[in-house]
Length: 102
Image (cartoon, one colour):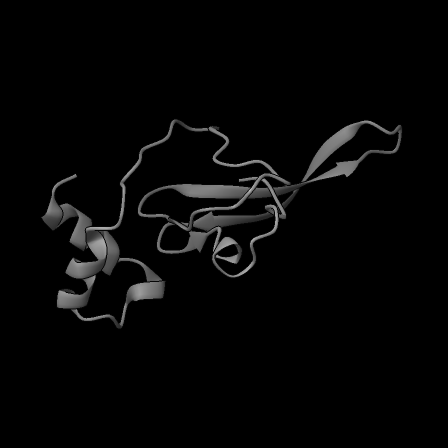
């Protein structure tokens, strides 16, 4: 992803929609674009959080580990986060483990 594509992706994010282009350009040097295959687990519940993920394309499923009726581990979907949003923001404010899986 070149700098023009990265700037376009940043402009599409609701979190950053009011940030001027010169500030977005300054921010972009700290970002690392990644692409993931469908179904990839980005982070697990209870692991250390160290990143905010900005979704430029696709969506991310957020789920929480719960015990099923027979005591087996299941995952309950909490949200489907679309492009233009972000996940992992709690890790920027709380050094504790991730509260869900993405």
